[in-house]
Length: 439
Ligand code: PLP
Image 1: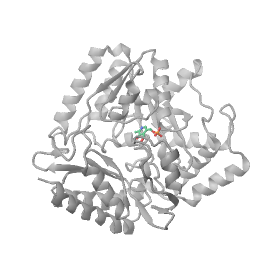
Image 2: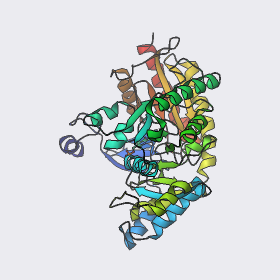
Image 3: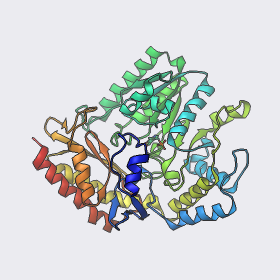
Image 4: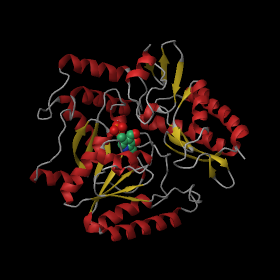
């Protein structure tokens, strides 16, 4: 009955409406349960947001306690939850460089507001973004995004968005760990030239994911992120790092930019800040940007900015990350997941490359390993990847991906035993893919 009502009344995102959706009753740890009691292992943390798994008592109880006192106060009021969370986030991001947080409802509007802040701060219009990226579904964030999900928003559009190519070493025929210096130079030279063609004095910001997530966990070549930072400094452009998916220990560090020797001017975040228990996002701005808005009005505002329940969930999540040493746990679990993924490359004809940082992983699915021909070409829908996800799901292994990659991003609290129980399911399905679909 629930699924039927869903099909009838829910406008389904990124899909045609009216299709079947499994009804979920409850969640616990890395598991979701349907109404028949069937267990599904959540190997993608839903949309890479449930970093601390489902129904964690520490977060649930914090939300309940806050609800008993006050569910919501407008942005003009100070609340314990909002002030505490902002301080904790700035401290972990690095209080020597960052200063203030603008809270938003989720990831898209975090990017939307970061774009407005950058334009206000610089007095410039253009925003540079990468083709292999996703920044959200509101108008500006959609136009900033690189993947096909921006096309609908481009009808009538938003102005000033310029896209540039990001390095995808495997797809470009290179090998990470071998060709980094060459690829970094090639892509930074091209970006520098493109900035000059567009007029660097017109460019407000480069907005990019610190590590590309929903387009397949694309790891940048060594030196690339530092090089982009240097270009921003050269031309007075702000660097906005979108940490909506990669933030909050997903890559093993609090923020993914911390894997590199650089700092952005603005960080956008969402997902892992509350693990989705109540939706929340935000922009963390550097001291330099924060000081500007001590003299100038911040022309941004949302009714629910700093929502009290959401911030209470966020404070509890931050406490849990720290007290349970999630950073250390991710490092340990990485030592199980990454070798398993490397093994999949060796063992299966259909896996061309494994990319994994922390518990942020993707397997590149190919039709032909020698030629690196992808299982499905970009932008050309085909049956194989949906077949893979359906076969995994049948076996209780839920994840997502797109034209030629499978994401492996389990909740960061997953245990060694759980990984050892569920990763073999992937191995089993990949054996079927080798036989059925590879050259
Ligand atoms: N930025 C990145 C990197 C994302 O992965 C997403 C969503 O997946 C967003 C922004 C948009 O976040 P939201 O869906 O919360 O608006």
